Length: 271
Image 1: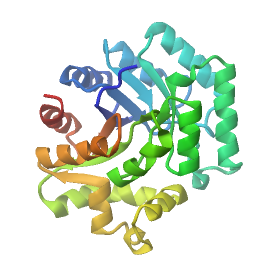
Image 2: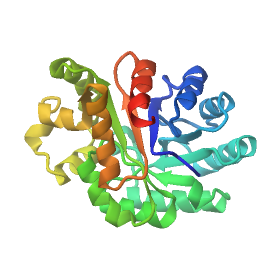
Image 3: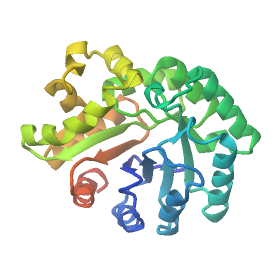
Image 4: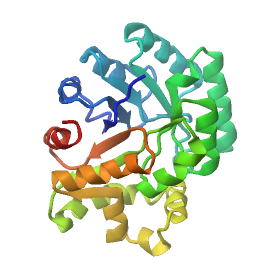
């Protein structure tokens, strides 16, 4: 499965067939659909229906929200209609959003085992992973890892754990050369994730402090998690993940002009 060096990450609300067709023409390799898409994953299939070559990935299906059986059924249906173009990303979600939260690692292992029993190939799944233990699980049991809300420093630390497995981090971007204006766009999104313990722990592991995580995030934290500037500056920030060991980087455009920003970055990243 060829994901390309760069892809895009959208919420289900952003992910329209029209934007998918345009994104494929620009040369991006993969569309990642986040926001915990639910079985039967019809919104992902609609993106595949509207395109010819680009890979579509779930980024990610929440293991707490859908049992593995219906997700496996969706995988097989989509694979039959669009062979070789669907990548199933799964992850554990967040304890804050789940009423009955079992041991997350055990749940991930069991879920992957159930997908295997249902005939979903390991090489067609990826696992949302941040910490060393889950990164190792991703390497051992799936195609690789899809980290979210990370920096190139995390990518560099994840690479030796994953070995030759896929490493496909997400990174948020704002094409705006005014730092204050860019932070005003990026901070609300960052602030949401700073309420979640798994992201907090990961950021603290990689050099940020409790002060950085307070009050919606320090400028330094927001700047690290949401690249901003002109097209070249942002593109260079995305390439830093490749330099640190990533195989593929998916950019998430924040702001109103997703299409225009993707187009401008494609000229820099994909030409």
